[in-house]
Every structure is written in C-alpha cells, then in structure tokens.
Length: 327
Ligand code: SF4
Ligand code: SF4
Image (tube, rainbow, N blue to C red; front, side):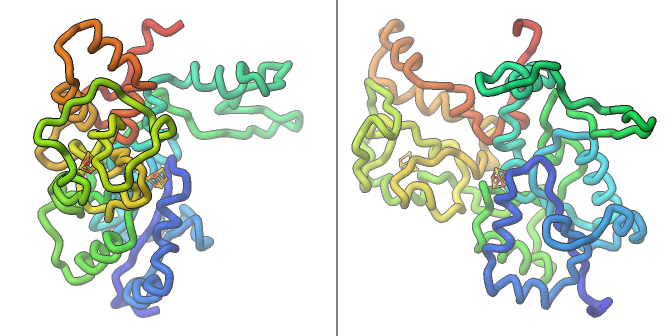
C-alpha cells in the first residue's frame, strides 16, 4: 500500500445490499480501482472498525461512497463521522440520493411500523408483545443498547453535506467506473451534480418513436394484466412508465427487459418533485374530461403514492405522511 494513493471508504446505511453488490459487479475492473486507491473502510467486505475511522485525520479520506437511507441514530453518527474525515461524499444509489425504497417507510412512523412488524402480521407469534428496545437490562445487570429507530427516513443530504450523487437502484457499473475515473483525474462537475445525463429516460428510449403524436389512454393496467408489446411505449399500452419524470443513464435495463421504468434514477435537474411531475404527465394523457371517469381511471392505480414516489418520498414536497389521522 502506498501513502500516495487516495484513500476511499464505502459505507452502507439503511440499504438492501444491492449497492454493495454494484461495487462487486465491477468484476475484474474492481482490480483497477483497488490498484488506484487505498480502501480504508468497507464494513461489508473488510474488517475495519469505527475506531479506525475515528483515528484518521480529518479530511484524510479522498472520497466516501455512502449507500442507503438514514433510518437509525447509528447511521446518522457514522455518516457525520465520515463527512468529517472525507474530502468528498458521494451518495451512492437511490436510497442515499433520494431516500429510495426504505423511504417509503415515511408513510408510517416507528410506532405503526413496530406494531405491524412485531405484533400484528398473521404469521407473528409474540405472546409477550416484545418489541425492540433501545435499552435492555440483563439478569446480570449488564445493559444492552440498540440504536434509535427514527420516525422518519432521510436521504443522505438531509443529514450531511453531499458533494455528488450516483443515481440508480443500484447504480450501473459504467456510471460507477466513470465517477471513480472523474474523481481520480480531478475532472468532476460542479459540486451537487448528479453523475448521470441531465435528460429524461424518454429522450433516449427506443420506444419513444412508437408514441402516437397525442397519447390518450382510457384505462391503466398493471404489467401482468396485459401481454406487453416489446417495441411499443408502455404508456401507449396503458401501463405506467415513469420515463417522462426520470433521469436517463441507467442503460434502459428495465425497458430492455420489457418492464416499464420505475423511476430509480430520480428526477432531472429541471424537475423539483418526481412524483408530481409524473402525475401531471399522466393527467395530460387521460382520454376524458369526465370527472367520474377520471376518478375511475385514477382509482384503478394500485398504491399511487408508492408508485409515483417509489424512490423519492423523503426528498419530495410531501416528505412524509402526517400521522395525526392514523389510528
Ligand atoms: S438503491 Fe436499490 S440497490 Fe441500492 S441499497 Fe437502495 S434498494 Fe438496494
Ligand atoms: S414512457 Fe417509458 S416506454 Fe415510453 S418512451 Fe418514455 S421511457 Fe420509453
């Protein structure tokens, strides 16, 4: 290991592990990355401890890639520590960038989540009604502690200052490799940039040319309710595709697999709220002005909030649901 190599850290917060996989998916290219940098912290793969990071000089890590949303006090503590020790922080993946799938927890709070997860699911057997506690005193008097579970899930930049964003669930390898090269070569765009093209998914989608001049739909279907034409725009087939409200750069992995875009790259720079943008795109293609018919079409969308804000709820205008009305 040479001291001249830039030091790099990887950390995961509230995540599924897919973003860690995206590093492993670099396959033999990971050897190029390892040759160019010193990995000084990567809990999922290497046995570094928090105290190793605490012992590092402030700003001594060139870049920390952090995936996952912030749901626990431990995650908040670790990302604040990494911020202090790092020159650059990259939010790696949708959860870190926008709150992602864990961010859908913002439709609930700690109490309702714990009640559902530990007490009320049909398969739960919990006669003592035990739920995780922050402090447990054992028979021998020893105390066990768990991190605080927040009511609200946060995107990374709602907790610390973030320099760059690598979008995607998970970010594709080409995007990761070009981000690493840009960092190593010092060819980074302005701070705050999302490291992916600032165009919409529709702009580069091959199916765009199959869209009729005026899209008009009378019915919304789920993917399993229709035999999907592999060439035709999903919206023209009455299937929700978040392409109009989503940033390009994923390589159309879902669309090439004949599945509509679910929005994991988040909005382009011109869009403030991805869900609201899609809602307005959808409203413009409904082929009716009759209020009852509109209600019926919109009412046929299963879980509209979860569909339009699947990856972006914590960073949306909504942010979270008001819990006052929930019993
Ligand atoms: S962005 Fe996707 S792959 Fe990455 S941690 Fe979140 S859910 Fe998993
Ligand atoms: S809506 Fe979806 S399928 Fe249609 S052009 Fe846009 S990205 Fe492609």
